[in-house]
Length: 455
Image (cartoon, rainbow, N blue to C red; front, side):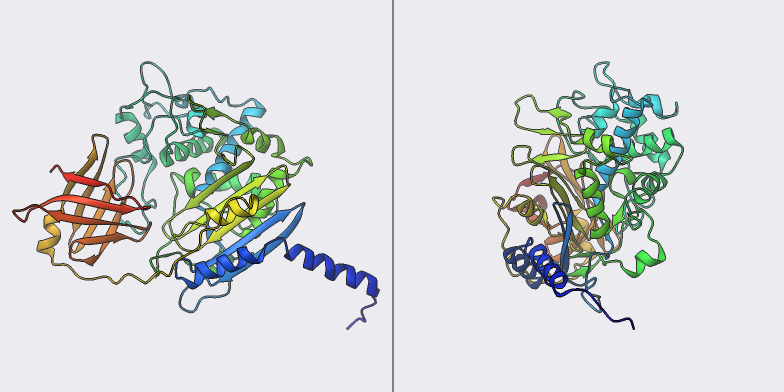
């Protein structure tokens, strides 16, 4: 072994630099993360902080509740809807190259058998898809997965075209923001057709190869599988989601290390292949008529526009990434459970944003309910003329599907109370004076709206 000959002054300087870097993630943030895991709300959390070009990481928890490995910056997570800003950057790159235009109608890039709905003669444009102003619903109504635990895996291009061709828009295009996985997934598909490559190939060619992001892909490599954090919901391990046709809406997996390279590219003023496209997506692209809301291409704004961010969530993961240009700070937070981590990311970007203190969460115990009782819950429950939840049954399993969303299994914690594993929510079925099920209450995010059974 070669003898080390570093001068003491250099060693002392290096140690000081390392300690100073570590201090950028405060003890309050670290304690909050540890509390979130200890409370049972999160299985594990990895934070990456890019401050003035320097990377700082903090991780706590494991890849699985039972027999998992310690998390680190190279642990792989599903990043969900953060994929959307990759999609809009790819779009912006083509716009700047002159091969596409934001005002191009969507139909220009699709085959004739995919007819796109219009509203009063107005066409949906690429910009509408990139800003969630297309008037398309959040999800297509023909989204009926064979496996609700991996709901996107079998949704095909043919089904997408079939839905688009039959759908009638219910409001004006370009007027209002309404978050649409369908719209952003369609944009990803359009980019595939336009550039002649799969979404994954586009991401690899434009991001993975250019910004040292080898672990940012849709398909898990053998190495990524070994480092994969298992997704969790309500204290139980859940299946990964394979998003193919709508990959541009949420199909990517990544690591904290890779995502900080993504943040570096978005913040860095040095010339890079997508520098101009990234900057283009940061600019306001849509503003509400009352001036209370605006967003970029894919990106959302917080703290009066000083923070540019996006979050993500799949069946067992929650993620956040964002940056603050004035302080030259970028953040990524990855968690392998369905509890939001937005508060951590927003706090690291601006300490005036408060951390959420977790409360102890007890695991929910499932109970078995007789098929005869499950049958009485089947039907459609309307919250309004435009929003309802449909309850269906497949043998002993109940499913809930909200308007414009995918179908998910629901699990009994009591005879009339069923919870979802993909989000923190439950539904309670209620009976009238004659003992007939006539109402449903949805408990989510501190709200408890009631819906009447209409059929």
